[in-house]
Image 1 (tube, helix red, strand yellow):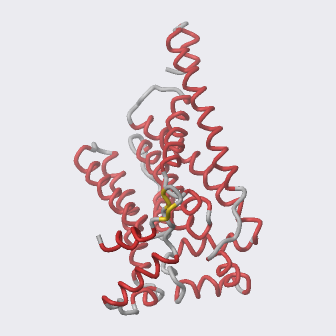
Image 2 (cartoon, helix red, strand yellow):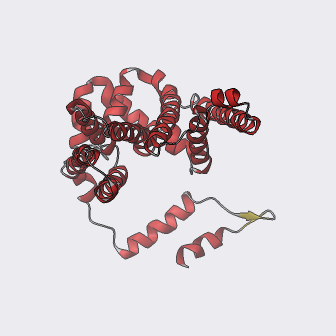
Length: 304
């Protein structure tokens, strides 16, 4: 029930519910603004400097070199995002996390709107916004190492970017599935879904694996419970989208850059043990209890 309907019917409990939903949505939106504001302090770090040098000389050649020989270069969408941001230089670094967090929030609200249409629910826009914003907040508050997964560009383009653009793709597919009940899905919509799935899959192998799995399950669900004439239309759309996801995985598999990660032989047992102890000495933090550092326990924890 919308706010207008509640006012028209003088439904006090419904008005109170709508007020609570709007207040909750405003609070969650404010919290998302806080997360976005924190991203404004992001700066170049680690791999960002390497990418800055690579793309500063020749943008096209930088993309080619990363895909052919660069570490992680098989993730072509990852390369594109980093390369395009380098066109704008260092000023783009703090803008990227802010832009993607807000874009993700919009995507989640659109997904909830698509779900509302498919299940033929009559909840208000306040409910739609509340659901989308709350999902975004509780996802971020539970996400490990936010700086690495959301704010740092070189890592965000692998972990967070596919979530953002995958959410937008999901919203698009839900909207097209709803329209399929009354009209045919246009070729342009299929092309958009195909290109979008190909881009989303190119950010990382795990993201593409999730995308392929979701699409297979969606096709199975439509095949089992769908009804004509929308069933055939939706299956066509999802089939092309799945094809793009599989093509994306193929492009990453055949990338020559994979040889850099797979070409070296694994270390021997003694070398592996030595590397573990060296890592413990230089990388693991010391655990101090009552001003007495329990460093030996770190070494024992490697063996047991």
